[in-house]
Length: 270
Image 1 (tube, rainbow, N blue to C red):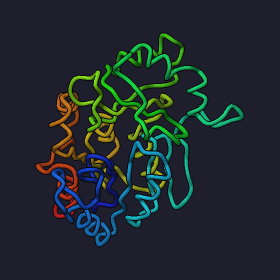
Image 2: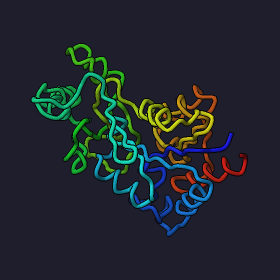
Image 3: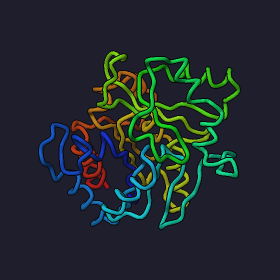
Image 4: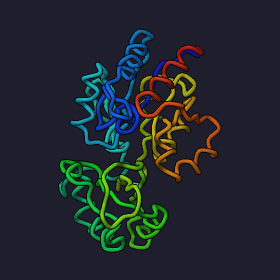
């Protein structure tokens, strides 16, 4: 089948050092990502960003690449040609405020901060301006966090791991991770599957590229999932999870070089 769509994470995947589209993993100027996007444009392949970032940021990144679809806030919603679709299940904005505000008013973030004192905090300043989810950084056991949510009657929410980041914390040993607190139904995988249905894409006509455990779940919704080399290098948890997916491939290149490798190798085979 021809390739019709590429779903890609932004930070640590499509973007290189310091979140630049024109830098590689070591900070050197690179056109690899732009050339991969050009190859997609020539082959009439849609490129869809799937990011934990908030909507205005993802919209602008998609606009700069000439794309009209994107997935934001870790799969809380997606947009196609200006029409937005919420993926948050029964949790919706209402008279009590945004989903972010509803979660805040329930005291869930405060409870998690108390339980994981010194190991979890807001991912400042990027936690501001969010509508559907909360964004943290730190180093915690996600299974423990989700069990805690269940014990407190908040099992309609879940904490997900969006991968290792470069922002250290003095109270955390090793690399910190970015975490999203979202309605339980939310995932990048669900948003990718919903977008593909709306566009009429078969899974075999799509690939995805990412660098985290949460990204890897998208393998269930696409033909092939490419993990850029820097993902498992930075995150032992991702390395151990890879074996569960027979359609997951680790690229030789890191970040944008890995994205280029994923796109070009797929186009050549088809």
